[in-house]
Length: 398
Image 1: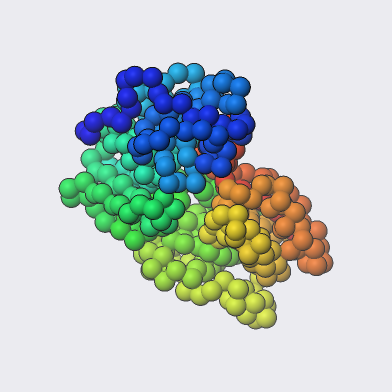
Image 2: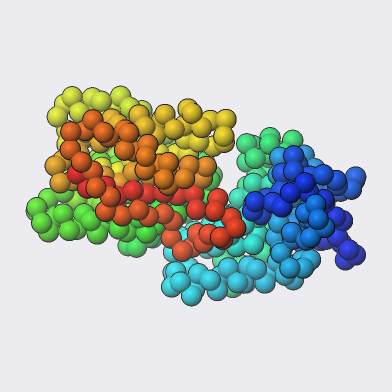
């Protein structure tokens, strides 16, 4: 294990112009900082009156200068290891099956900023969004393996995150770490691509929503004797296959990612879901053509990628949410259910709901909100870090 960057002496002090809004301190809000601080070095953050705001890790070239870990006292590696144990205890207390795909570490919400860790079978898949979080992973990963009995690990610091800090991207794999792995989620089998998959390879944040959709399908089949489902931006078929296992009689998945569609088709074979069809296509022209052809569905799922990755993309991203839902909603049968999602952390639920209202106002029939959900309890949210509540899902009945 590499040596710790956290000095035993008093932490250097960062003076702010104002109290930070949450757990992130931006360079523009710093009034004074010592020179020569190293990446990942522990610092204490003070407001302009000299009151301590907490202790965090420093980064000289990131837009986020300090990511606060602990409020009341300095931290060390033992404290970090205890955070990892607490994160597992938190999930066990929430009755989360840690043997199935789930999130083990949810960054700031588990007191380990810029680090997420997901579990797939005997492999831990970690992603860091700052170079300062690499030591956090090096410190807590042995604890996670010890507690869970996992054997393999992957660490990624992708090109986009690295570019934001003028750093080099990184990928580290343990010896014999698999490239493909098969997992089971609530009885649905999936192949997870640990080589070319997005993020950590699978989106376990939708686990409970996929289960809810499956139950909705079961209820529709019990009521009507059949159920047709459209899954737009299906990726590797998560919602489509949950619907198929729930008894849907017709399932159509659409995605622009050709590699993801190939995995989705293999996932359909894993579940013997012969009623599922996956199509490689841009969602917009496919939806328009499907409407012209008279295609209609009992359930329509719209789960696009992050359309608003940063504030500079707000206008472009919000327009995409509007346009995609505008062309998807008309394919919904009378009495049908529409599940529309956003994983853009910058987009509040209230703004998302308003954008969906605008997109569907000319539909000619009202949509009523049956539920508003997000990620499961394996994605906890700290009150002082609302950014952790990035996933939004609206369940709308026509």
